[in-house]
Image 1 (cartoon, protein in one colour):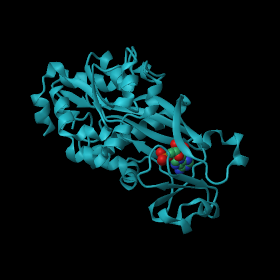
Image 2 (cartoon, rainbow, N blue to C red):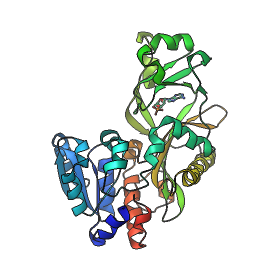
Image 3 (cartoon, rainbow, N blue to C red):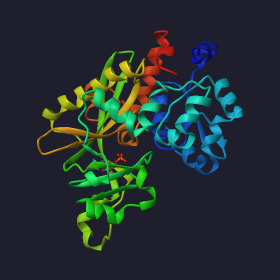
Image 4 (cartoon, helix red, strand yellow):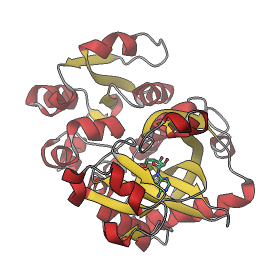
Length: 345
Ligand code: AMP
């Protein structure tokens, strides 16, 4: 169906659109660098912010009461009239809803929408990682099986919300929300150093690129050494920022081959597979091996560190190349090669 929509578009006037949150500044900035018209769907409260950066403000703002209004006929018609391709990001998926995006969105979306089914369901995500050969932490089948450091995760919780960590089962039991007991997954707590590599699978160039690495700042776990004795119960893991990072160069081969494995297995599990940006949340253990605790199959907010490119993007592209710009470049190459329908859904 979206190939018909794309065929009806004026190919000389394609606009790149997203909703005003998460990585919208980077997406708009990157699209402008590639010469695209840009459209931002955003709430009145944020309109001022998104108009206030001269190099990252959209050509057109569509103001809505709430982000889920993106699905209304009026907004969708406006976007179709703009020849818009939507770029999904973390808040986009959270506010609009994965199922609604799959069922009700008529505006073409960059990448393969089917990936949302595999990303948002923790069980399917694990199946994908395992089939790709990416190491994952051990899951305890139930509370009784917990025999060491543990982190309990609520299904569907994002951005680090709803996590409870403990040194052992007894400590965990004290902090768990008993009413929600059936909804937790109990996972081995990994001792190591966190690296969140940002990747891009380019269908046009048929290659996986590492465009950057970050580490999240999470409150209040990340400065726990300062106040451990004041905290009663589990620390919190809510993401509040990101720091830039490079990894020891001899560790890059595993990071690259894990990403290539994910792309190859996505093509088997849900053809045409993963397209565009994605990220792995990795913990490097003291045996120098990475284990993946989470997968994001879209642009992640950690890429906001690199609007002018990263220490890795520089080895693929001579100029500035953010993930936002990389998306726009892929769309530009898709247009030039008459292959746009292969990279939108
Ligand atoms: P998630 O909700 O899976 O994205 O995890 C949020 C944060 O919790 C991560 O950024 C890590 O800091 C931490 N975390 C998640 N899983 C584990 C694990 N198995 N071991 C240690 N830390 C974890």
